Image (cartoon, rainbow, N blue to C red; front, side, top):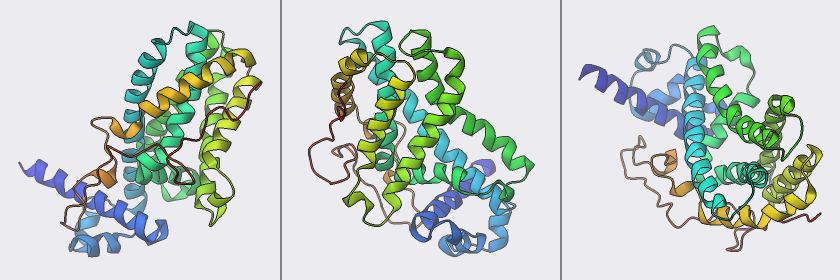
Length: 281
């Protein structure tokens, strides 16, 4: 019972930290801010997180684990749906790469807090983390990169793209590039001029062709991936609700958001989807 109480308090402090980051930015995340948010003494917070680096690593691990878990379910659901379309093994493997791009694009709307937190790992200098923090954070980050590695390695081994030995480098390139494009949404008024989702899709199409995919095969799987992405949104996955959707915020008031009718991310807010087929070869 004592351990359960301690874990509940730890979870409450992490929830408070997420609220602070979303409201005040990363610079506003301090032990004092968490203490004020939950009405506790600052010393109590340090009893759970000895330094800001430990707190930030915990937040990132939580975000990454949620994102990876959601991807695992999304991948299984998409693969089963795509397989019903009668795609060959190589085209199914190619479609999985494009589906990964759709998944990553949906993260920004389905898991806004978790998506932003995982980007902290790219934006913050590693000096804030000590060796103990990194020993836990690095394996979690590796799990995130493994998502892109798996689809790329499977595609290379199925002959959909060339050179399986390049899958590690390509997985890093893909993950970092998609994260970088997502930063466009943080620029004031940029989304009125540029669709980061469309840019991500175009980039992914260019990359897979550059990695040796047959343009005819790419063209053949685009519509299938678009249809499945529209019917298998991430927010419908049981067990991986976003922080925003959970009724556990530290205000003590219900703060549940019904995600059952939410459409995948659209920059202009329209009901129509951004067509994945932004390029035809």
